[in-house]
Image (cartoon, rainbow, N blue to C red; front, side, top):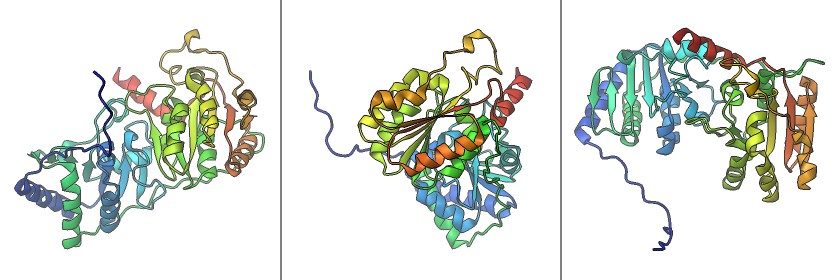
Length: 370
C-alpha cells in the first residue's frame, strides 16, 4: 500500500513536565551554583536537538559561566565566544580543557549523551557528587533525581531563576589559542593543518569533519559557526556527501576535513557537490592510509593506495585542485580557496605515522585501561 509522505512540518511531542518537581529541581540546582566557586557548563547534543541554543547562550552570558561542549555538540555553543572552552571529550581534549571541566566544583550538564566516543573512550572523569545532570526527561542534582523534569523545560526555568537571583560568577581566563603563522619549508602536520584551517575560515563557513584523525584533531579547532560530524557511530565517509546537504540547507560555505582513507570511500560525491553548485572547500589530510588505527594496531592492512584527488576537479569539469606538503603551500592554497566561489580540493601530504596530540592522548589513556 502506497502511503503519501507527510506534508508540512513534523509535529514532535515534548517529554511531559511535572511543574512542582520542576520548581524543586531549579531551586536545588540554583543553590548548588550559588555555592560553587568554579562552575562549568557541559552542553550536549540533546540541548541542540531541542533548539535550546539561545537559552544556553543567554544563561551562560548572564551568569558568566564557561561552556564546554561534548564531541557530538561541537559548534552548538559558539567556539569563538569569550566563554567557550571548546570540546570536552575526556582524554581527547587538551589538558587545559580537561582541568577546567574535571576540576570544576560544579558541572551542569545539559543534554550530554554518555556514549563511548563522546566520553573519549570512557576516559572522562565526571564525579556525580558535583554534577547537575539534565537529560531529556529528568534532572539529577548530586544524588537527587527529579523525574519528569525535561531539559526543554528546565533550562529556560533555570535561566529565569538565575536572573531573578542575580546569580553572577567570575569566569577563569579563556584558554589561549596561538595564531597560525606558517613556518618556512616546514612540512605540514595534522595539527598544523587544523591551525591553518582555523586561521583561514570565519563565520561565513561551517565545518564538516570525518571520523578519524580529522575528528580528534579538530577538537582543538574553534569552529566559527556550526560543525557537523558523524561522531556517534564514527562512520567513515560521512563528510564529503554531507557537504551537499549542508551547502543547500545553510548559506555558509561548507569546509570539509577528511582523511585519505575516508575520501577513498565516498570522495567521488564531490562531483555531485560541484554539480549542484555547492562551493565546498575539501581538505584531504593524506597520511598514507588508516592513520587512526596505526597507533592501536599497526600492519599492512592500514595501507591504502594514495589517490591524486587534486586532479578530480579536471575530471568533474568544475572547481580547482591543490597538492601541498608544506605549511606555506597550505596557507597559500587555503587563502586562494577561501577567496573563490567554486569547489576547491586541497590535498595535504602529512607524515605517515605522526599522529595528532589529541589521538596520542586518547591512545595513551586507553592503553592504561586495557
